[in-house]
Image (cartoon, rainbow, N blue to C red; front, side, top):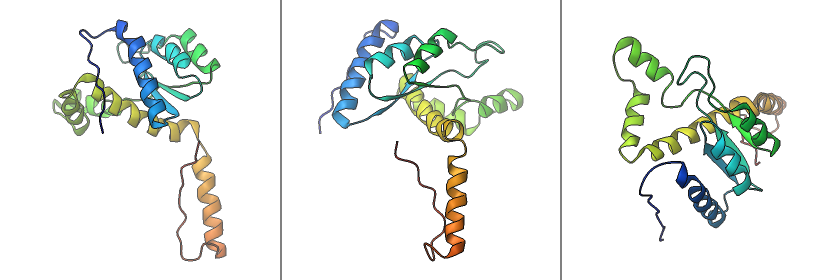
Length: 178
């Protein structure tokens, strides 16, 4: 297998368009239909909605209060655009921060989440972000957008199990095929 890697001379917003196009091409090659995008203020998210037309787009934002207390950096106007085009905007605690950062500040020590984040940064900040937003989207998707789905699945599976259907099998949670 041969995979093409593209490196940019400098980081920055000027690379966004090319990065999205390269990601779209690779997603098509692999048959990927669900795309997770990191976006701070929403400009990348809005552009991704056009580039990845026909795909399910989950946009992961910074947690509210990341830079300033009670301030959400993702512009409300951009959120409306993304949602109007069928995208999902997910704002949740950072998978590798949150509790770990709070523990570090209070007890002046490092916790597992921060150690993992620092290890991923060895490969580049982008690699850390990709791993973190994937975890955030997976956790937030089941907890926020499918609320009640799993509870109903457990209840139905439990009833079948008690009736003797699926004899000898424990109720299983199956992730829906979207």
